[in-house]
Structures are given as structure tokens and as C-alpha cells.
Length: 88
Image (cartoon, rainbow, N blue to C red; front, top):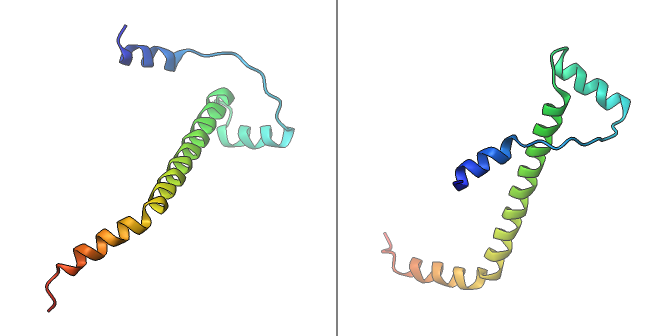
């Protein structure tokens, strides 16, 4: 099985679980979804969005840490490059 097929296959695998939510939250979800809405699909998408945003924030934080770690060196390189510019 190729990696792509494995990823596609696992995208469709579902595990039944149970969560407890407050009644007011359920009412808000149901209002958003309407009568034909699928709570499970909604909660799954919200969680996917949340996890993606969290991963993006984590990556941005790591990138900032790396930039800060090398800030002095990067600034020296930038100043060196600027020194080669012709003044008007």
C-alpha cells in the first residue's frame, strides 16, 4: 500500500467516542447546523481547525525562537550587505 493510499484510507477511519458538552453549546451547534446538520462532522472539523491553528502557532513560535537565536549574526550579515550599496 502506498503512503498516499494509506493516508487516504486513514482519513476515512472513524473511532466512536463519547464527549459531554453543555446544553447551551449543543443548542448553539444545532442552531448553526440546522435540522440536517451532522454534529460529529461539525465537531471533527472544529477540532481539525483548532489543531491546525495550534500547530501553526507552534511553528511560528519555533521560527521566532530560531530567528532570535541567530539575530546578532543575521543583523551583522545584513549590515555587511548594506555596506556594499552605492549611495545616491
